Length: 380
Image 1 (tube, rainbow, N blue to C red):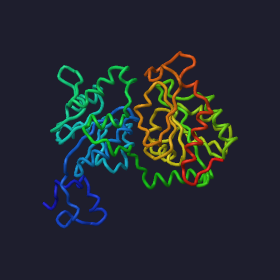
Image 2: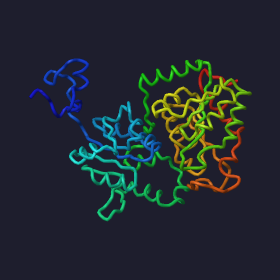
Image 3: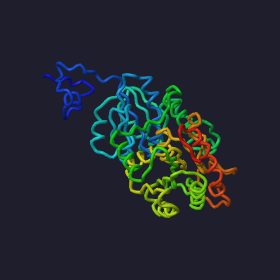
């Protein structure tokens, strides 16, 4: 047989990339390499958390440079891992063939950072020489594989520990995985085609390199009532930006923000651009990449803008601002001056609450400060 079945580049059911590109066959191929240390990451929930968990990958690859990394996640999060240089293979938790593969394959290291029953059961099922994070025992109880995972399990069980926590999610996950604290960048890489599509969108709306684009992500998840700022607040902020700066405003969001963004875009149809509510995740990332300053709540958009190296102004209420790394000043955090923050409640009847007590002037001033640090950009 001419095939080298243990080569990490051979997919099994089709020619490898080097056979396609160069026409080489195994006997004379200089790219032959045996798959090294085999790692599997289990991270299923939620989409935003899946993206920010990619921050473990640079440190993981630095610790195990010859590793081959497989990542298992839910189908809706699979686009997050596209074009990721650290992930050799992404498997959909929802796909039947994933179960067959994981029933047969063996790994050197498993990392599971979710303490949900689904994730823990999968982690216990997978064959791996070493496991870190969480598993499920025969009595249906979640347990930590390693002592470093105990603290995160306790934080998930007690809201008081969440509120007291002063460490970022990235630092906590790196500790759980027994990895060094740096590097810890969230990994999100646009393809050339995606960058071209974003550039075409900018051209269509007559956006030039001289424009300062302020992205406003006007929603959050449907679960958290007070992760998103008020409609009135966004309306007043947009008017301030239009009257006092030369900014172009991009409105981003999903189907839950459709009516809100349509309303806000009518303030000034030329300078307030509704980027659409039906974009795929990858299209959404391309649109975020066009922004210079990005305003958002604690949601997927926050992690995407961070990964894309944008100046981010992030709003926090019921969830912890301490869990978000500031990335050396890349992220500016805005919170209300209230004692009830980090309540982790999905609904609230307090008045004033953590959202309506934050003024448009505060956001406006932070946008000016952030824009002033971007070379070649001026908002005046």
